[in-house]
Image 1 (cartoon, rainbow, N blue to C red):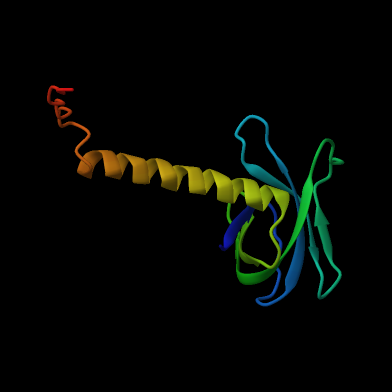
Image 2 (cartoon, rainbow, N blue to C red):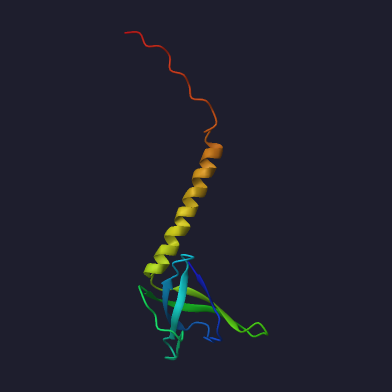
Length: 127
């Protein structure tokens, strides 16, 4: 499953380059936050000014698309990345999406499965 990384910086990485992403889950939003990127083909490192603290994960992916937007509100970059190997954060996102899909399937089953029908009464038993 492709991942879209949005960074508030100008990070130009060519299509097809392998990158190593270091990210941490934000405790407030429960979303992954990118702490650092390493372009493994050129060796260029991009990282935040502050040092990372707490638990973080690393995963490797290949860049499918890179869009750098320059404007008055500030520059930002959108990277579409194909993960080569799943990382712990990637697994957490996949599980969250799987839970959402399961909930949607349950709702659809309830809608079509007759959950609103009254149960069939059992007949009396004679022994």
